[in-house]
Image (cartoon, rainbow, N blue to C red; front, side, top):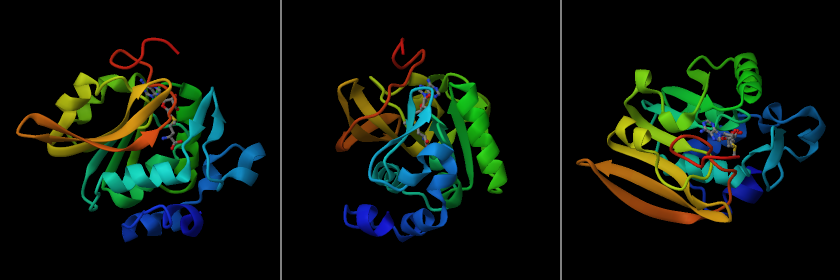
Length: 205
Ligand code: SAM
């Protein structure tokens, strides 16, 4: 996966690469689909949701420019794989999932693997996690029509937020930097994600 998908497609950050060697992706995938755990596409995790393609997880992670001391908020826990990757590269990870069944499963795997710096809660991630704000980095792993306002407020000055921005037919992976209370948008590449459903996302599944 690392040598055939990540490095040839431009992932360069050695800390990110090392983490993808270390974290066992198959542990986050339903038993019956583990034979395709390392394939170059998203895999179903139940509830109509997916674990993103390995390259997309790596690209989003690399775009966060983590050094090791950050407090990170993830919206869309899904399988818990991205949270595990983030927990290897940052200080603390807070992750929100709207489906309780997915949140509980992710929590169980992450506990089994020994992660102590990840907290998961069930709810509408578009509202953020005000009690834990502000965050150095925010990653939204579902397609959003705009940057949810509460998340802009909960991002630290000079913080980076990554999200797939756009409609249900396709989005643009975008990095948003907060500088002097202004937002700078940088487009990274086109992508396709499941929708972000919530007060500041899409209204219906
Ligand atoms: N990061 C995940 C992983 O590593 O497996 C993959 C995430 S999947 C592409 C998107 C996730 O976002 C789904 O699990 C979906 O239920 C969740 N989601 C959608 N809208 C949400 C919201 N408003 N709050 C929290 N989670 C949401």
